[in-house]
Every structure is written in C-alpha cells, then in structure tokens.
Image 1 (cartoon, rainbow, N blue to C red):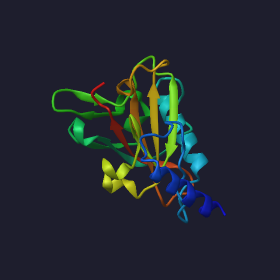
Image 2: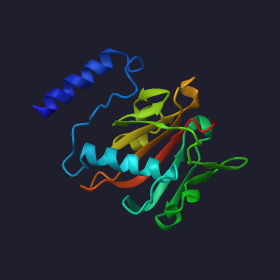
Image 3: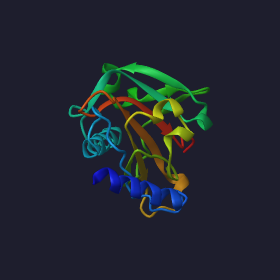
Image 4: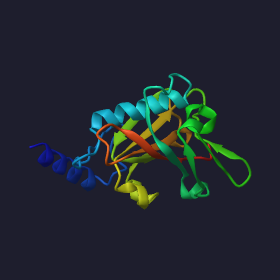
Length: 182
C-alpha cells in the first residue's frame, strides 16, 4: 500500500512540472532493502543543518570515515573528500574554490528550514540527477534554508545530504552545496 501511495505521489508531482509545487512538499523514495528510513534521514539532515548553522553539536550525526563534499557545477564543480575528524568542526565543511574556499556554512538570518527526501533544492525541488548523476541513486535529502520573509529564492542556502545505501542508520557519505554564489 505504501509503495502504491508513493508511486501515485511521484506521478502527481511529475505531472505538475516539479517547480510549481510547494517547497515544503516531501517526496519519499521507495526504500531499498538496507537504505535508511525517510524519517531518520530527514532528522539527520536537520541535525547537519543545525550543526552547520552553529546551533547543535555534531555528536549525534553519523558520518562515514570519509565524506565527499561537492559544489554544484555552476559553482565550479569542485569536490573534496575529507575525513570524519576534519568535519567535526564547522570550518571543515568547505571546498577549495578557484579563488577562495567555498564554505558550506549558511549565512546568518536563514531561519526557515525545508527538507525533501529524494530531492535537491535550487530555488525549487528538483532531481539530484540534474546536478550530480553519480549521487542520485543513493538515498538523499535536500535542505533549503531561507530568510523570513523570503524576498527571493536566490537568498536561499541549499545542501543535499547523501547517505550510505548499505546502512540502516543514516550515515552521511556526501553533500552537494548549491547556490554557492550567495
């Protein structure tokens, strides 16, 4: 019954064109045999957002031995694979850019948090395959943080958290940062 409901929800979302839906909508993926639960992934993504925003310790977040950080292609497409230890500090969540490091830490004043299982944000929810096809098959949660009131989606901070598909607990293996220019 759950798979039928998820299939119908996905078909309805696809027929609406994706960009016209509410940014708060959550589309759940059909779980793979060992993939983490959608609710657990959402909680892990919220924990990571709170940590990067300086509002929570990282102690409860399960990170793989190494995590690959990616910048969206429009931002240069850089990536870096960092050890779990390097990511225990907020400043470690950065990728070397062409001129300066690109920090994954959100700007101050972004207080509205939206998450979407199986989606990536760039103003609106979209497929992760459009930005990072190599990550799209893995379980993931898109995060968007924006100011209230939001004057433009261009003021949003977007991060997609990617999890290990072989772990029942949501273990972070990668993250894709988008709208890097803001």
